Image (cartoon, rainbow over all chains, first blue to last red):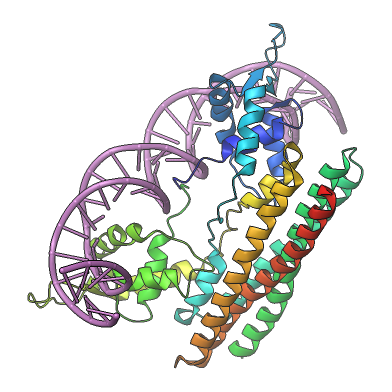
Length: 182
Length: 182
DNA sequence: CATAGCATGTAAACAGTTACATGATTAT
DNA sequence: ATAATCATGTAACTGTTTACATGCTATG
């Protein structure tokens, strides 16, 4: 996927909220941000090194004793780069729904197989909804500016609405595929 | 994106519905399948060559005169490969919502900028809904088996529900961001 | 004292994109 | 004639993934 590199802005964005280690970024990716952004663990560290070379983030003056937990802070230039990116209109995201791809070619297989896929999808959406609820209550008790709070709420809200739509669809679709199978 | 290659199954799947040229595949990608699958034009032709080498598709015996429009047909082995893939549970899709990424870091910029992004998103969703309506009426007048018809309807239906959810969210989000800005 | 989680990285491979290139056919 | 669309490809690049590697720290 040779589009514009966005990993850098994920890192920069998180660091604009305070100093972070690579691990912090990875954890955020697993928890809070998981429902709208995916990145693999090992793509973080090379990016950290690169951003430091470019002067967009800076590692805190290391006390040599504790070799672990390299915490980075965003620089003024880093903040400027982030603002610039934030101002650009977001490009349409690359859409790839493997379930629908299989469904649309489903003629070549058994309806029961497809119903199974849909039920698996349903389960994942239920799990996603649970994580969204958790994210929501985390937001509720995080001290932050009025603006930041609204932004997080909006983010979670889109996740919820879309997940709810998928859930409703999956329930109906599974039932309809059952009827087709006999 | 070094996950399992799926372009091959897109091609194989479309060819399971009848002979297709590379261009046909590209057009399908632009029209019918655009709302759930993206692929660039030029990734099709190399895949065609590869699938032929692997014996999963076969170019129709070419009459040497008309050098253009190489039409391919799926082979028995191709059909088997497709069925195998269809039986595997779909992997969760990689999620990357750039709008939400910007929104969640929006603290570092002006609310009006974000409202603009949301309105742009709204417009894209409206356009998507129009295309889904078109896809729906195309499905309605395509002769196909009862099963195939249901599958296409289900596919479009998920697209619609999700798009509707996004639309509703975007309207509310834009209004809320306006209020924040002043 | 073992195991789970914390924490940081490197190297190779690859899927898919971007940019480039070419020519036929059809409609205005 | 001109433009748009049809139609097929190649080459280079690159962002991201996969797999590998290492060692500390807290807890039961």
